[in-house]
Image 1 (cartoon, rainbow, N blue to C red):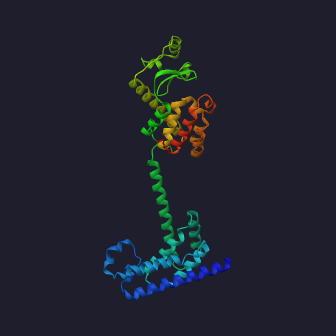
Image 2: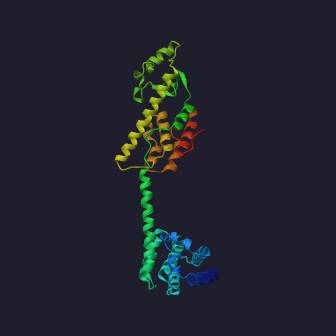
Length: 343
C-alpha cells in the first residue's frame, strides 16, 4: 500500500511540476517582458499595473502548482531528487524566472522542516551534484538566517518582559474578599490576635509584632490583659486601611528581596503579574519565613510553574483542620497564579 501511495505522489508531483513549467513558458510567450516581473521580488511591485490583470491569476496558479508538486517530498533525499528534476526542466528559462521557481519550491519544502533538518538538508545539497547548487544553498542559507533573526527578535522581546515589582488592584480585591474586615480584635487561634484586614499581632514576637509602630494597636500581652477585663481593641476604617496597605507593601518588598537574591545568583524564572500577586497573597497570609521554606517556592525557583500552581493548594495544609477558610484561600491563590482572578 505504501508503494502505491509513493507512486501516486510521484505522479502528482510530475503532473503539477510539468503544468507549472508549461504555464511559465506560455506566460513568457504571451508577455514578452514577463521575465522582468514573474514571481520577482517586491521591488517590482510598482510595475504590476503595467501588465494585463490576467497575469496575476497565472502567477498564482504557477505558485500553487509548484507547491502541489512538492507534496510527496518528505525527506532530504526526496527533496534533492525533486530539485534535481526541477532544475533540469527549467535550465533554459531566464534566471529571474528560474530563481523564483526554485524559491517557491523550497519555501514549500522547508516549511515543515525543523532547523536541524534544514541544516542536514543543506549539507546534503552541498555534497550533491544538482545543477545551480549555489542558487539552492543561497535560498536555504537565507531561510536559516531568517529563523535565526526571528529567534533573536523573540529573545529581545523576552528580555524586555520585566518581573513585576508590585501587586495589582485585582489582588487587593481578592485579599479583601478572603480576609474580610474586622475593626474589633479577635483571637485567631494560632497564637495571635487579628484586626483589620487580617493584620496579625503575635504572642511570640519572633513571628512578627509591629504593634509598637501603630499607636492604635496593643501588644499581644496587652491584648490578653484587655480580654481578661472583657475589652477589645477597636480601630477605625482609616486605620484598618493603613494596616492593610502597609502589610501588602511589606509582603511585596519581601518578595522583591527574594527575587533580587535569585537574580544575583543567575536564577531568573519568568514571573508574570498573576504569579507575583499569588505569592504576595501567600506571604501576606503566612509570613515570609514560612513562605521561603515551602515546597511551592522551590518549584517556582526551578521554573516548574505547573507543579508550583498545584503545590499552592496544599501549602500550610497542617492548618486546614483548624482554619477551614485556608483551603479556599489556597485554591484561589492557585487560580490567581494561573492567571484566573476571582470575580
